[in-house]
Image (cartoon, rainbow, N blue to C red; front, side, top):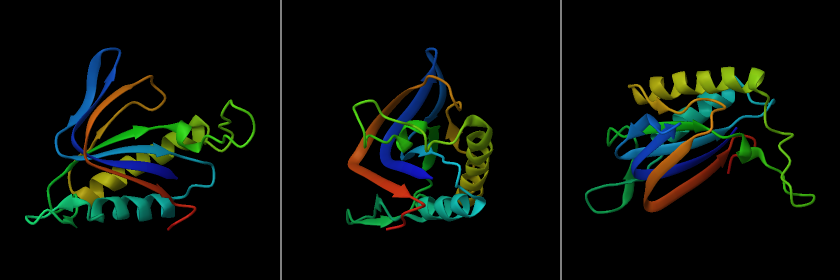
Amino acid sequence: MRVIIQRVSEASVSINGAVKGAIGEGLLILAGFEDADTTEDIDWLAKKIVQLRIFNDSEGIMNLSALNVNAGILLISQFTLHASVKKGNRPSYIKAAKPEIAIPLYEKFITKLEEELGKPIQTGVFGAMMNVSLINNGPVTISIDTKNKE
């Protein structure tokens, strides 16, 4: 799995002009799935995201997690995170999981994030054309790949 995590002051996702999900302070997560992803990847990543200390404490130091600040989470599926641009100028998405594999992983990820956060999260719609709006706070943007844990 690959994710881009953005600390936001607010974020929302709209489909056909209607807001599907929105949060105030929290994390916007763009998530891409591949065939090799497992429940272990989901479990590790959900726990890591919720416990990342990327929110400011009273002294302005990134020392607090989403749990500590009661942050919201907006999760958006994004297969383009697995784009390969090695050859040519047209990205290849061969590593991105097909919907029959990716949708169950996406749904498990939603469930696990809600479990770790202790409350419901907001989402887009898998495979839909979505417009995502955000105010990146910091800016703070973190990339994590479960196949290359750094």
